View (cartoon, rainbow, N blue to C red):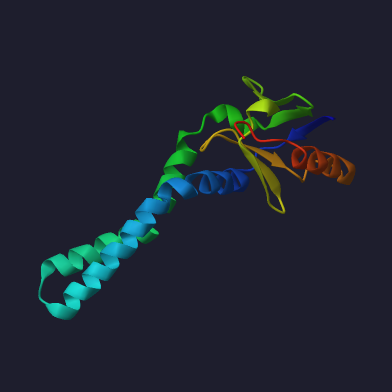
Length: 159
């Protein structure tokens, strides 16, 4: 396989990638949110004048609905300006290479954790929170088919 494409900067795709990567890390917070809401509702039912019941409800709602968007927004702001110029992606049988105007990253397929395919991208996971997004839009149909066949044949590292 030898595929080389230019990938323009896409802020919405970056946001979706961050949401995808952060989802497992935010799962305990969502569970805590549900517990706090249940405790708050139970306390309100038992003693409506208890301030602790309303604190638990507010914290549960905050954890459930505000923490994830705040975390994604914070992560977006923390991204280097280097990525805003887009990048050149090269995929071959051994490497994934991302070349930005001022930086370059290379990852061996041998270190692959897993690949998750969506209608828009392939998320290539190297560990639990390191993901490379391989967008489908810049590729031709033939290139998409070649990448799909290649990643379907890969064996995740450590298995």
